[in-house]
Length: 389
Image: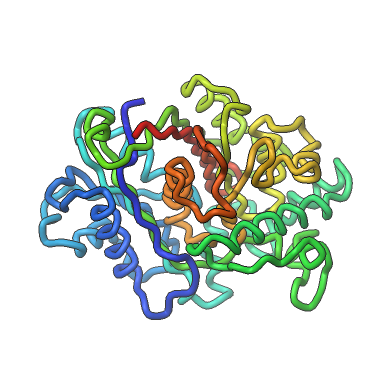
C-alpha cells in the first residue's frame, strides 16, 4: 500500500446540543489539518462520510467542509455513503485517489448528528440500512434485526447472555478511560448481565447494554502518499485494505455467518502479508454485542459458534492475546454513523503512536486491525495499519 495517515482529529462523541452538523465538520477538519501541520491550500481533495437518511435536513453536505476555510474553495469535495460503514467508505475512497496519483493530500471527514431527531424517527432512519421490501416490518428497527439474529444464534449454539454481558462490560470499562467516549462509566458485568428497570430488554435477548448509542460527533484524517508522509511529523501506513459487499436481503444469506466480514478479513490479512495473530489490537464494529461476538468468529479468532470463548477466557481484554475495542467500541464510545469508520482509524493510529490514555493503551502496539460494517455485514471494510514514523 502507498498511503499513510499523517494527522487526525476527533470530537468527543455524545449529545451536542450547542453544535450543528456543519460546526462538527468544520471543527474536525480544522483540527486535523493543524495536527498534520498542513494548510487548507495543501489539500488536493476532500471526502466526506455522511450517512444522513433523514437525520439532517441538509442533504447536500460535501461542501460543508469548505466552511472551514475560504482556501478550500474550488477543491474537489465528494460525499460518500455506505450505511454504518460510511466513514470507512470515505477513507477507502481517499486511498484510491492517492494510489491513482490523482491527489497527494486528501482530507477525510466523517460526521453525523443524530440526537436532535425524535426517537421513533431514529429507528425509522436506521432501518433504511436494511432491505425494506422484506425487513421493514421487523419490530424494534435495527435493534430488532440484530435481536432476531441473536435469538437464532442462541437457538443454535445455546444461551450466550453471559458472553454478551462480558463484551458489554469490557467495552464500558475501556470507554470509561477514553475522554472521547460518549459513556464514560464502568457498568460492570453484573449490571450488564441482569435485566432491570435501568437495563431492560430491547429486542429478542438483547438488553439496553447490548446496543450502541445514538450519538453526535465528527472525526477527520489527513492522508498522503507514503513518500510525503515520511517527511511529516508522524506517519501510520495502511498495510492493507479490503472492501467486500454482500447481498442486502437477509433472506439471501445465512444470518449466523458474517461471510462478508470473513471475506474482508481474509483479503486484508493477505494483502498486508500478516496473520491475525500478528495484530496488536482490533477495533471492530460492535453496533450490538452479538455483532462483536460473531465478528470474533468471522475474523478467525475462534471457530463458528465458539465466539464466547474469546471473551470468557480474556483474549479480547486489554492485555489479552488480541485486545478488541480498547477504545470502548461503538458500545461505549458512541456511534454517529458517518463518523464511526473514521473514528476507528483515528483511534487505531493513536494506539500505534502510543497516544491513548494509559489504561487503554495497548502495550508495544505494532499492527492494528480495523473492521467497520454497514447493515448486517453487507458493507464490510477492513484495514491493517502500521506506524512507519
